[in-house]
Amino acid sequence: MAIELYWGSGSPFAWRVMLTLAVKGLDYESKLLEFSKGENKSPEYLKLNPRGKVPTLKDGDFVNYESLAIMSYLERKYPEPPLFGNSPEETGLIWRFLTECESYLVSAGDKIVRPIFFGKGLDKLDEIQQAAQTIRQELKTLEEHLAHATWLVGAQVSAADIAVFPMIQLILRAASKEAAQPFNLQWFPLASLYPNLARWVERIEALPNYQRTYPPHWRA
Amino acid sequence: MAIELYWGSGSPFAWRVMLTLAVKGLDYESKLLEFSKGENKSPEYLKLNPRGKVPTLKDGDFVNYESLAIMSYLERKYPEPPLFGNSPEETGLIWRFLTECESYLVSAGDKIVRPIFFGKGLDKLDEIQQAAQTIRQELKTLEEHLAHATWLVGAQVSAADIAVFPMIQLILRAASKEAAQPFNLQWFPLASLYPNLARWVERIEALPNYQRTYPPHWRA
Image 1 (cartoon, each protein chain N blue to C red):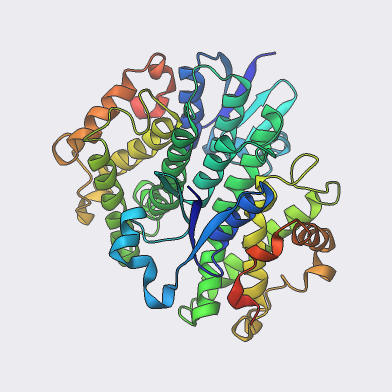
Image 2: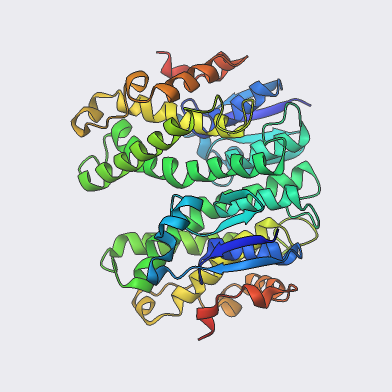
């Protein structure tokens, strides 16, 4: 039975799982949900994922949600190529990048990306500037790390790269919007401000099957 | 060379690692940091953990921080008994509980536990009530799950139990404080409101070496 992936265009969390499937060379049936039509809150979908979020993965009878949880499942079920490290030390560092991404980038991103995309909460200036500063600090830390490394951890692409990358893309997309201009975010353009990070982004974009993972509505 | 654990009394994140070490029967050298003396911001400590938080684990030459990252490292280095599942499905579900804990319990807890403990931000009534409601919802979900399960995932204690437990303890401690009374949190007492969860708490408290992990300043 094919793997089924429920996802939404532009969700960085769904993008992580698509990249995982791409790197592992796993085929899947795409179930694209339209948030604007409330498809993620339909009774059928809530049976699979009571939180009504994406991604959700169904593999035979097994259903799971939360991006990092799905990635962990896929790693154990389809171990090649390994995405969670080749040693205890690599595993530990990969999870450090993953949990730091959740605690800092995702959490600061929430406070600023949504207001920019949806125009709500743009008046919370202090909160937005504080979140923007957190993101600059995280970008700087990644930039310094990538001065001496091709991938975040180890000699090949890992779950760390795959999970951080969609958040970086989302943040850059937000920074390019007109609503972001008054905030002087200084996240963008990546190539001049964070050149190592820019080259790392290009490396991920060159992964096989990358194109299939790109959010369709971002192409428009 | 002994494992060294840098921790702070009452940090739920440090507590997770102490429970992991306890369940795996690993001995370690305790490095208790006093936050009130700024020991977590000392130059020596910032070399180990530039974020100046706890826990940090040093095992020989390898240093790592972020609780879930340390737990993942310990699992791979010292696999017995396994705490991250005996099958891909168990691994996936354990990580679902872990990431849900971070996204919902930890993040709502931040908005309410700190104000209660430190008296700052208690005027943000809407935010506190919203966080309190999120926590009630998460407690309810755990309560329903534990109606049919001894442990959160699988037939024995796992990383899911170990990581969620200290957050529950922290939340209950906050709820018992005088500053919490005006909010009518309805988290407490656990035994009458969430009896399955209360029995699960007792199961964890009965784990071998549990007593060594209990925050010393909570005994006072």
